[in-house]
Length: 242
Length: 136
Image (cartoon, rainbow over all chains, first blue to last red):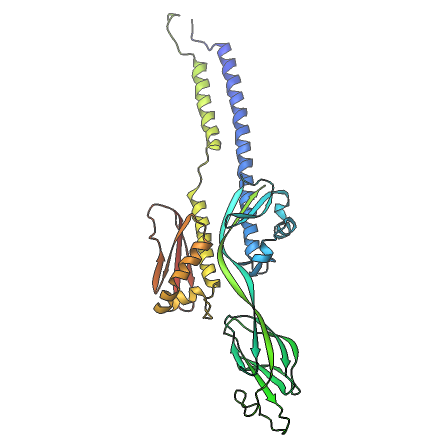
């Protein structure tokens, strides 16, 4: 008897092999779909983290510095407007481990971790008594200062200088509120040039001698309000699962 | 030839070979090894972030950034050393260690020889700073 191939064996082998091939194609397809979804996840998570940290983003004070107030109020619509592709995905945004925004369950998605700063504005108010002081240097750097001037009846505030530059001037006297822009490049030094009218004479100080005046002291006060930036390091985490 | 000889059925051999081939191909799709390149890219992004953080941070009594002070002079570096460490420690994830080298000094751990390490460099007006980060 020749060693012939057994028909049953061939049939069984064919069925097993075909079944295995179909199964493999199925596994391959789901692996490829999974891989492309992973790439999408990764791409969206990277985009979202970049957009959250961008200088022109609604969430930042400066490039790379998140605004604490605006970032902790992060909403779904804000996230979607930053990266439209995440509108249909599960998203989580965390800062220092705490979840700031979450939609769905993105645990299986791509995670992007970034190092950043969290900033907030602290405000300080200080009152200058013009009888005692006519110059002050603010203890923090700031980029805007608010003044509220109330001068006494014998005093006229003619000029306000910031770092030797005249920022407010009125010959008949400054009064009330004003906002001045300053710069964080240098400490802010304010100088107030006053003129005191004596009841008995019309002798006036000239504007060239702001610090020392003979005769009665000026009366009045200037309330100085300013804001300064406080920053702390923070870790941003973005997880996206499409 | 005798019928009672134990012959290996040829179709069994063919089927087995086919099986092994198909299983080998299937296993390629199932087994995925996380590429060490991804980790290095992530670390490089974190290192660049770290330098950006130092460049955006300002010591309260100076106009230049923390990075500028660290690279500018030895006394400046010494004065800012603890702030540099604190800023990097709080902005980088807790699982990450770092090393910052400037022309005037170094802050951080020694680099591990056996792990992926991300590196970023910054050139300031005063000198160059290099930051390495790795997962502890």
